[in-house]
Length: 186
Image (cartoon, rainbow, N blue to C red):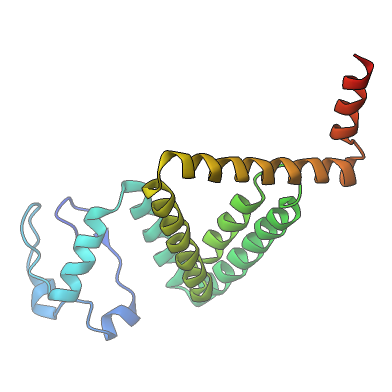
């Protein structure tokens, strides 16, 4: 008998999760589950149900789909290859866009997010990145207004320099020389 959430949605538990004790006992499986009632699952199973309830609907569907794909050995290998190739393409494009104007770092982090679906090292690196971005953001928001103004000005100068250098060396347009020529002509 399949396990379902109180709203009636199925809960997919892999065989590995069953061996770890995340499943329910045979007598609990034989009991009918009424919507809105407690499933009576052990602590690990209850955590799984609570985890399913807290997620948005689209995340539940993605999680269920991935669990169904991973249940088949061929599907598991195909998913791993697909995630590896897709993540590599996104990260490569992001790295290429870092010196150019565009969302380079955003694409690199998005590629890490894609890899994090299947690879633990990418999940750890993504968590590390998030933690440091959040700590930097919290630190900046605690600073006084003049300090935040200086940080913003330094960031603006840095981004402007990167845009200027990338336009100058990749496209051949020297914006600074063009502006100086226009100022001399006036």
